[in-house]
Image 1 (tube, one colour):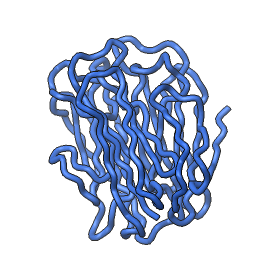
Image 2 (cartoon, helix red, strand yellow):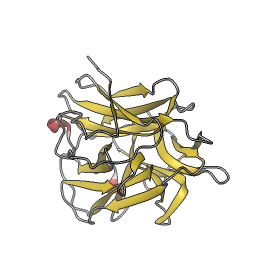
Image 3 (spheres, helix red, strand yellow):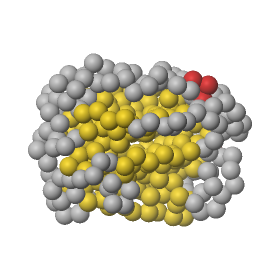
Image 4 (tube, helix red, strand yellow):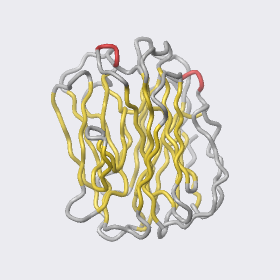
Length: 302
């Protein structure tokens, strides 16, 4: 049975579930939350099927961001990755999808947690989406969605479309251009990688930007792990004192691009708790000799 839960950001962090090693809990410091902000979570039923789940904000509220992470499924680590991490077109809900990847499918049960960050609609609230279709380069494809005019980015999302499970997400990060390695306050960036085990035609990737007029206390904070080759990277980041996350995003970057890069590292979790957030990723079940790093970005406000 799936049971949605709600908790306000003004309280201490609540344990969401028993997590894999990547999900680290905090005793969150007091923080000022934007108007009407609350976090809703849902734990999926455990089974061995690819799945997606959607959370809808309470009446009168919209999503400013969300999260998703593999939960209490240690055997599935390195075998499951995200293919959807996105708001709905009307901003009322948040959907996360995860699927099994690799040459040999995982046969055990696994589950994940969906997180929706909801708030009273900020002034100028708007969802922007852009899609890119075609043949990918080096088994990857990137796309950005940009807020119009003077509006600022509150959060970002992405979903893989019409590829029969051939691609998964490796990068969904707000306010950062992964090509130029420069920060931006208007662009949401998404990137996929081919898992190399499923026949496919052209890829389609949709990127989302959650936009609004600049809110009080608006600030973007980013952190990265070292460029090394462990089985797992977990990267924490915090909003400054007195601020709370509108959204969080994460990504994976590898040291080289070649034939063997396909789904060697999997984005496994992105979440926030109180004023803090983290993102984590695992190498596949066979390990990988190349170096890579994980990144996390949080958009904060008060």
